[in-house]
Amino acid sequence: MAERPNWAIEGRDWPNREASRFVTAAGLRWHVQVMGQGPVLLLLHGTAAATHSWRDMLPLLASDFTVVAPDLPGHGFSDGVPAARLSLPGMAASVAALLGVLGLRPVLAAGHSAGAAILLRMALDGRIAPDCILSLNGALQPLGDRHAAFFTRTARMLVGLPFVPSLFAWRAADRAVAERLLRDTGSKIDSRGVDFYARLFRHSGHLAAALGMMAHWDLVPLLRDLPRLAPRLVLVVGANDRAVPPAQAEAVRRRLPAARIITLPGLGHLAHEEQPARVVALIQQECAGALAA
Image (cartoon, rainbow, N blue to C red; front, side, top):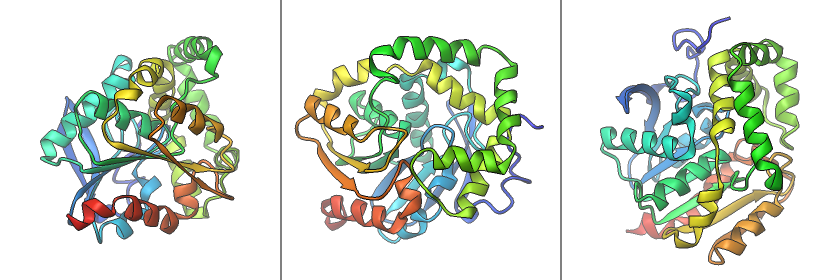
């Protein structure tokens, strides 16, 4: 079982492969997809996902935007990094370095789950200055809330055991296991989408990056800083999300009253994969000002 996915094998039929390129930034080799023309839109996927998460949205968005979507460090086909760089500030700095090498300045940004937290950290640190950030089922509250410290310590212990990612990968090598894990998020995605997740879940390096993010994720400073966020924040919530309870969006809005909440009935944590055209329409609607500029 290989530690990292191989572009020549797992990437042979990767969604939107023609938009893929490999770029060196922040000391690692990134897989990034760039497609379309117009205002720059940055898309960041969530933990344990990769650019395939945007497979159906990317071509639709490319008619209005220059869309840039990387595999986060250690995810998909991007190189891994030391565990400390999987922290929220570390991820934010790495993505900013990639944008610098690409010479792209996003005026719009959308992130799914943990990707939304990275975007907010980037904006708060002055690394990006978009007009609007869309959080798609954003993971913006500490795991377990009051018990966050326990979960973080446990995750660090697990990721420190070298056999754990391999064990997870061995378990997830069964496509049925991957399908069940995805279904447990409250979403039902198409068979092709399940196949891409299953393909990645077979690799211990990909899962080690996901565990490493959990181990080094500290959202308390982000929530503390949130009231000074400059870009507009739109919280898009799948009503059936079992991974990030929809009520968390209300907790975020209590810290930032200007934030808007848009609820998508019948959809789960992977709402953007369940109904990509619906989420694309939301992005176009929320970013109409930038498109008109």
